[in-house]
Image 1: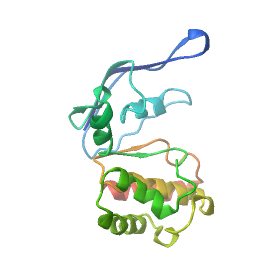
Image 2: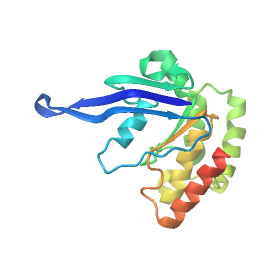
Image 3: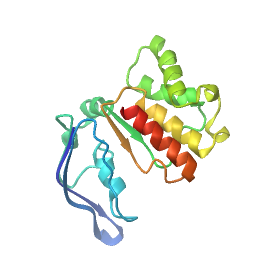
Length: 189
């Protein structure tokens, strides 16, 4: 469950000009719910989303994820809370010097998984997203849709309680977008 209460996010631009990217947002998202945030470019959608895993801190208000006020955490407590939150980025955020399998395994290593359990989990997840045959490829060898599926695999590998998606289909064609959205619905089922 996600609760956002009266969240504002301010950024300081050149010459000390204050820009409010998110203004007094409150919402409640139930467990298992698929929830979309819609708005024009520059409306603060990505900024609001980034407050849910504390990649961006609210200037005011509070962000509560699964009963934990994530906006108040730092250090080890924040790292532990983030392990329960998967994030699919708009621009994939893959490590280009690592293979598909290594990109997925990275999130499991960071979460402290036992070495013996990582390879089987990576194989399982790559099969789920239809990339088992691409495990040893590098991101440069993949299409946009395949890169996004690697991002999805990495985001769900650690069995997160919450999956955040920042425009996961914005850089993809219509057919690939439909495939990605169907995969996300399958994961949520």
